[in-house]
Image 1 (cartoon, one colour):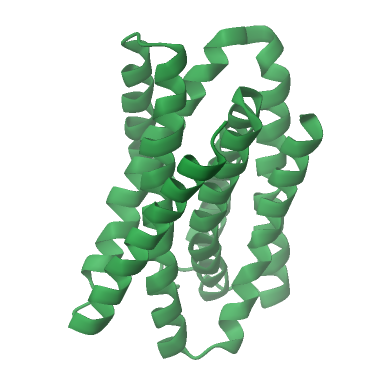
Image 2 (spheres, helix red, strand yellow; image 1 turned 180 degrees about the vertical axis):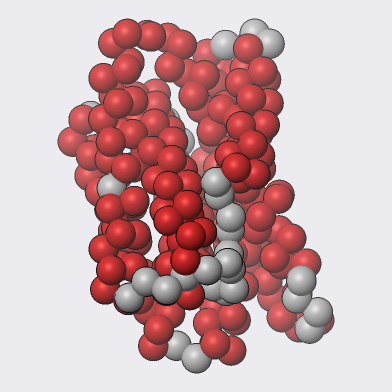
Length: 244
């Protein structure tokens, strides 16, 4: 199980390098691709929360603590974004000082992702894989944005890639902490799942879906909504045909 957690976390940390792809793509094409990536990620996060994380928790505990954990996840992600995160999918953010603050926020975010991945795998392997997919789908557009923040903030491309990767490695640390934390908190580890669901719902509803609303072209707007549904349908497909 530990190997699965480390492998999934490491693969997700490699997504940090996807930012360099944005340098070789024209802005128009990048915006179009990002719109659809954001749509798919939003659908996958909503599907991951409502079809996988919450049902898995409710099966094991029907106490009010499940919904308190969900609410806490939602509130904490809101607070963290207010303090240190700033999602920027097109690289139009403040300059140099913020670049380093963004790295800190990204590191905290990835650490929490690692905790969530560990808790999911410790619950069951299928849930761990689905959660890893949900995290990865969200990380792709975010890492492109984070790389843009660092470059526009005055960092060289190579330095931006390396620092972004190091921030991404905190997902592995989170995975390891989550794995070894299990032996200390036991069954309480299950409440990380609704906590993650709250975070997924917040990110999808507060950061990603508003990006889709900014598209004014009717055709692209319709396609982005279809891709959003596709992200949700992917999670539903996994739930129906690969659930334990």
